[in-house]
Each structure stands twice: as C-alpha cells, then as structure tokens.
Length: 229
Image 1 (cartoon, rainbow, N blue to C red):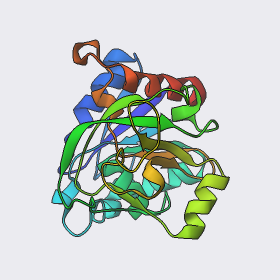
Image 2: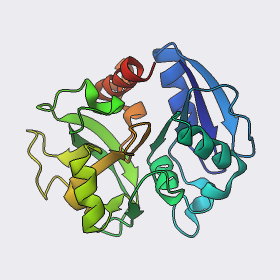
Image 3: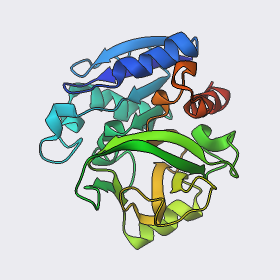
C-alpha cells in the first residue's frame, strides 16, 4: 500500500508518522506538501498531528482551505482511505469528512499524557483486529480534543458502528474519570459511514516502536494494513 503523509505549516508529527509507516511497517510513503494538489498515487492519506496554521481560529479551520484538501476530499469521496491523527482529526471534522467537532478540553488546559483506549468498532479497519477486552495505552497531546455532536449524530454513530475508540481505565472500564477531555460518550476516535475515513485524537505513532516500550499503537497500524490493502 502507498501512503501519503501531508505536511501543513505547523505540523509536527509528520516525520513520526513517516518513520512508523516507512521504516517500521515497510510501506511505500510519499510526502505531500499542503500546497500540492497531486496525491502522487497514494492509496491512503494521513493528516498528522501538530498545530496547522498555529491553530488560529479553531484547530483545523484554516487547514481545510489548503489546496491539498480539495484532492483529499475528492479521494475520500471516491472511497479512498484517509486518516487524521489529533490535529488531522480536527481538520477532518472541519472539512466535513467526519461528523461532530473537537472543542476545547473541559479543563481548558493542554493535556499531554498516556491514556487508555477501548476498541469499539468491529467493522472499521483501525480497530477491527483489536481485542475489545484490552485497554490499549496510547499518548494524547491536545488542547482541543473534546468530541462533541448533537444527540441524533451520537445515536447514528453508535447505530452504524462508527465509534473507533473510547477512553477507558486501565482495566477497560469506561468511566468519567478515564475521560481526559470531556468528550461525549468518552469518544476518542470515529469513522465515517463508509468506513474509509478515520479520525482519532490519541497518537498511535508514538506507541509503535520498541524503543518506547509500547507497541499498542503498532497494532492499530497492523489492523489498518490487514483491512485496507
């Protein structure tokens, strides 16, 4: 599979993502600049974490107007795969490729720490091969990660198996105390109805290398490769 990793002004996780996909996973990766319109034949587009355009206005609100996004949207509308991590997730909601919005954390503070995730969807590639009884430890680093949607959208996400991950405790229980940012339903990641666009706030690329003593994120990428190839 050929991956395309987009760099926006302010992206800071693009090289981490390239390292995991190219060096650890052995995949072909092309680097895409935000002013590009050619996706260079990539099958799977990744919008990485960071602070695109300094997070002025709302996070992701300016990046959605980058020239590359017109091609990314067209790619997704044709069934092509797209994944946004952290700021990338924010860009996807701002662009309308994913439902809901990412609001300021309820603490009004930037949070950088390890959290635990419970896989939910059994039909979406990033979580399909994961064990729903395991709590996966993945880092977060965001100030605007509180997932919000109206009641009808939340019900639709549940009914269509669109919730990828929820924040949970180390024992896998979904509790309010395990929710780091106030996300409704403890939501940490979702997919679209067609299961080809994925967004999550935690950073699996930061939990994919033996040197970090955590390979839980690598399992997410392995699940993606197994079901998107």
